[in-house]
Length: 336
Image (cartoon, rainbow, N blue to C red; front, side, top):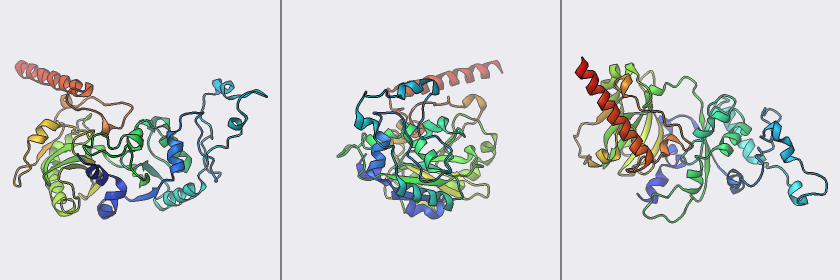
């Protein structure tokens, strides 16, 4: 994998080309001071001071029982440290507030590649839904998974020349409360040919997918040929789509081929064996029964960047799960 292939998957790179077939998004370049704020773990957890009064979150996040841990007695400690002003990013906050309003008042945030999925638990809604700058800052500041974007974006590149991109961007994406997880799919492109499609949410069996599988495959294939193939320049990559109720398709994301991108209902070995020759049938995989669901992957890194490479812990875990599923299926068939 080359750095240029990873760079093409940054949202600020691909979104302008696919804006007409994607979710409404506003993108802002982040100042280096804000990046350093996200990386700083040297002191108490402080949220930026808001220039507005409509943020309901406190400036400091802490356990009330540990309040004394933050008290400084007179004449003790570093005076300069005591007087350090809390972080503030008024220009960025103003731009973000305007974007949130233009997107209907509610958004979910994402950096160049990743969203702070692992910190959704800390929000008042238990999701990535944000209506203020403080809520966005809380999710970003609490996320360990964003360390991928901030420090390890090019770790899998054969021509790695840097640990981080030159610039970071915050993408604010319009929040849709009625999105159906069963209608999200990951598409695998090899040699600029669509070779595989996988149900994105593999922890649940959705009977409707059995009914609509043929139609969904046709829709996604046609969308790839008409709207993706000639616009995305990499030879090998993946992209995620969402199929709406009226059968329109929206691009959600692009990811590199292999590395930390999850193959979901495939494994990378079998995908690598597909030559990508034109005319090959697309392998479309869905969870076809309740006993075929995959275990939930609840970890401290984003779902898209779990290490499931050969030999990894998750690789062995998933292999064992597949073997157990096959055993149960054989037992069920023998008893029928």
